Length: 489
Image (cartoon, rainbow, N blue to C red; front, side):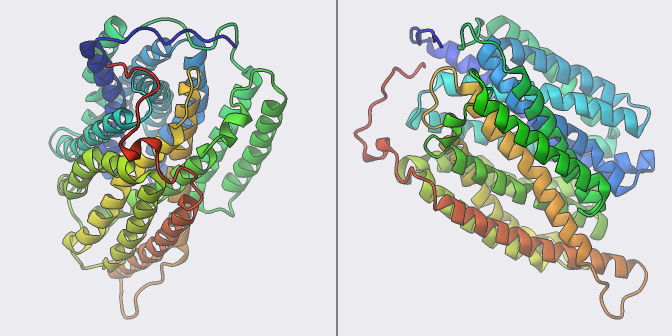
């Protein structure tokens, strides 16, 4: 395949503007995740929905987001990142508005699923653009740190804003808040984002690979989302999961025979691509489960308001902002991704164990040490695993690398949620001598504690996977590294 030349060095102002637009795309996704999570109890009350039914408000979004990431990443490589990026912003904005005016739970879930498609288009191409404008090495790591810091601020802002909007204006405003941001972002991107076609000239998108990868991933996440509500033994879980195995197996067969595969298998085997993607899945699975358990504990067991529950996320978010934004890139530059991820996995395991101190009549502040240690580990782990996953990316592979690690991360959320909620449901015996509501609270907390122990063991698995990373220490850590091409600043 032919690839265009890298081109001249871009002005500092233009690169900063493009970087800002990349941040906006990620910001919309992350703020949507945190803002909707806080509003879930209020949405459930208005539509008289059960907890399993209400989880589809997030589950529908997660399914389409995960399912379309790989396809949209490769579509950006083929047809141009700008086209996919701007189209995704428009779809996301329209779906946010229709979600805000949804008259029923079903219509809200449909809008959320369309939102997920738009988010897949924007986030995967945004990260591909990010990879292109910053050369591999300290500059990319530093910029990724800034990106993480901004997104951490967005997560905290989403949690607080979600609580405030839900409390004072109603949950519908957590959907409407995306509309002005999306309109402004789409206008700016149309005007200032560099245009042009894709890197992959004279190559069409691998349609059979696209269909099987997308449908297989959707079936997988659909089955896992069902597992979180009805368990793995249900036909609503078992059948989609079995079908996903067959479809994804067909996808691998197609890719091994295709002349222009959606995912070249040689790329997956290169360096630490496979290992880092497996680690991304493991780390995000812990976040997916714990991120659901803690807000439910705060609001449904301790009885905190949505607003106060959102405020309690600020200390961990501050850890993400400071350590993830500035500390993670320094650690990777000095010690390499492998050592950084070993430290991250260890801290995540310790933090989740400390969360078992929760009790039916306890306080959120008892959990704060565990949340802070957990946040410290995750804040250095997520930037490091993304750095490892895109290391060695060549022109024309930006969307591919971005799509793979984004898909791994997104699948991790429902995996963790399904596993930990299944464990929590199986280990929720009532406390001896308890009656009425106290039985329910004691049983829920007991199940959550077992799930947190399981999450800690998953963190140990992450530690073992990190041991297999090949990039023990990057070439630039010696201080003598020079980039092989100009960093476009």
